[in-house]
Structures are given as structure tokens and as C-alpha cells.
Image (cartoon, rainbow, N blue to C red):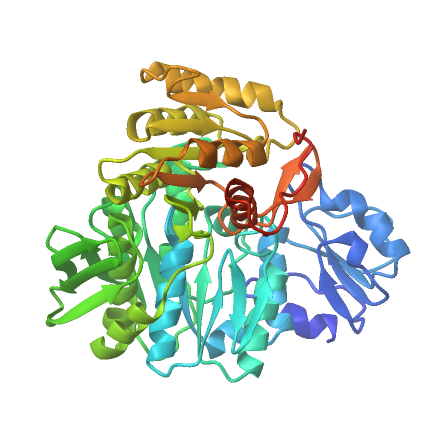
Length: 511
């Protein structure tokens, strides 16, 4: 593609350079630069792409996009106010603006994004709609599922636009995209031209990056603000809001499009009715379709909210038939790493969940408590290094209040001291009456923590390991070690029962 053709498609004006090279690729990673590439210099949290311009030129870059004019460059340079935004729009233009050929449904929130996105996708599929899905777990394009990365939530803008282009090429008509606050703040989903925006909830998370809850909430709000400027596609733009969430009034204020609401108990467009929580799932009806009974194999009160959000997005915003939505909810048996049961025939329940925020851990433990009845809940979890420090105390406090036994362990300590992280968590547990060695334990090695939990479990108890879910690695220092909580829990159970299963993976904390 000629540079001039690419620049002319941008939604903002920029000065064209005197020469017009034919470009071979677009990238913000200098390591990916090949002859004829357009290199976009993006300023990051720990590095500045402008420092890598000489390397990009050495590797054959044909032109660069910069935020400040660089002296004495031998190739054309395009100066923009925000190179992150420019990268997103250039990526969209490079792929022919694929989002304009798809009905785009964006799902954001602190907890429940992946489940809600997957529920929406399941409903659309049940309705015969050719829909793709980009979530924390994978990108689903027709019959193909692609891994989106070890710790990646929303992929970067070129990757997102590449996935969307593949969906268009495969003949899909809709895309459900899980959208994080980082993805919004860092312009990864700019150019996605959303038609429906959905929120699950906005609670304490990522304050290490956003610095305050208000900033975090505002980042989530960008998804809803974007509806008013997104490319029109012949159907009304809709924001789906949770009346039960504390951020409802704020989001209602920033939304300049049609609003659809949902609630477990309050008056809303989609309010739950006649709810039954069973060990096998949830049964309910909704105010929008009072005569139709909905059922889902998913468990927990929070999954009722996820189902209501999915129904509002599909029945309410997209006009999907309630009967198809009914079939879609019932068809989704589970989401990888979300309240996923591991059963090797043991006498207690073993669950893997992704809960890694105070709110998500509270909800997961409340569900575990419902399953355990009069028996005990044994929780295994950690708190990540180089992330929100405050939640370490909050999560330990939550577990001290809701679990009978808490095993505090590693969860991606990165370059921080694992002992220091565990001490902060132990402080939180003690502040809520926890007694070390009785109601909570520090077990630095996650594999040993799972072994200990399964050894302590008695018939009828619930062992739940939280924080890693579907993820397949754990970071110590700057190294990602292969780790999957589902495999590790199976290994711990196999050792307990004396049966053959995959062996426990190695971590730097392993004995």
C-alpha cells in the first residue's frame, strides 16, 4: 500500500511527506521491521519507540510515524499528536477497516468479561449468526480457535485489526470483543467502530496503572463514549448497563446512545425473575420475556448478572429471538478456567477460577460456600507483583472472612519479592482475625499449596484455586514458566489418589 493512500484514510489531518513509498508492512515493534515497513514510534510505560528509530531504519523501514520531528532522518517521517491512536487507525486502514463490515459488540468490566463475551457469542451462534470472538482465552474465527497469549487481555491494535480482517474474509458478520481498561486507555481498540457496548461491573482493579478508581472508571467509559462517533451501519448504537453496579450513573451520563439496562433485582429492561440456584446451574426468567425459562450450567450469583448482560445485548440490542438466546445460554457448558471443576473421583469438590480481584474472589468464595454447605472452603490464591498493591490486603481480608482455610501462594511475582507480597497478604488476613498456621498459611510454591489443599480436604469440602484460571504461564523475574492451574490441580489430585496424570510443572519455588 502506498503511504499516501494509508495516510489519506486517517480520521485526522496530517502533513504528507514529499515522497510516497510503497509499504510492505505496518508495525510498532522495531524487531519486526523489514524492508519497506512503516514503523510507528509509540511511547510506552517503560520504553519509547522513538529510541528505536535508528534500528528500524537500519532494518529497512521506508517511513516512520513520530510524535516529534526527528532531525536528519533519511526516510519520510509523519508527525502526529498521538502515535498510539495513529497506530490503531493505520492498522484499521491497512486491513480495509474490517470493523465497518462487522457488527461489533464490545464487552468491558472488571470481572465477568470473558464469560459474558462467550455467552453472547454462544447465543449468536445458536441463532445462526456467523460471529467471531476475541477474548482473554482465545480468538474464535469460524471453526478456528487461536491462542491470544499468555497474559494478554486485549491484543494490540494491529493484532485486533488482523483478527477482524480474518473474520471478514471468513464471511463472518458479527464480532464479540472483550475490551480491557488497558486496551481502551492504550488505544488498542480504537478503530473498532463498536455498535453495542456492554459493561459487567467496575470495581477495584488496576489502580497501579490508572492511579485512581475514577481514572479506571473513565477508561472503561471510553467504550461507551465511542458509540457516538463510530461508523454508522444502519442499526442504532446501544449501551448495555448494569443497574446493580456502582458505576451505573456515571456510565449513563457518558453514554450518548440508546441505553438498555439489566439487574438481578431492580427495575430494568432485563430484570431476573423466579431465580433458582442449583448445584447444576441457574434457572430464571426475565422481565423482557416473562413466559420463557432460561437455564445455564454456570453457577454462582455473579453468573446470573453475566447471563442478563448477554440477554440484553442479544435480545435487546441485536433483536435475537428469545428462544435462540435460551438455546445459547444452555449450550455453553463452561468457560476455561472459570469455576471449572476438576474431578478425578476425589471425595471433595476441586475448582479452578480466574478470580484475581477482591470482588471476583468474594463472588467465587460465596459460590464455593454455597456448594460446600456445612463443609469447609479451602482457598488457594496469590496476588501479582508489579500490579495493584492495595488488592493484596483486600483479597486476603476477603478470604479470611469467607473461606475456612486460606493458602497464600505465588501468582506472577515478577521482579518483586514473593516473601514481601505474602507478608502484605498475611497482614490482611490477620487484620480480619486470621491466625497463621490455623486459618491461613503461607506456601510460596503454588504446586505445594495445591498439594497441601488437597491433603487437607475432607469429604464434602470445596478446594478452589483462584487467580490463574486459563493462563498457561507464571512469571518469576522476567521469565515466563509453563504453568496451568488446571493441570497442576489434576497433578495434585493424582498424587493424592495414586493415579496416573500429568506431573506438576516446575517453578523456581519448587523443591
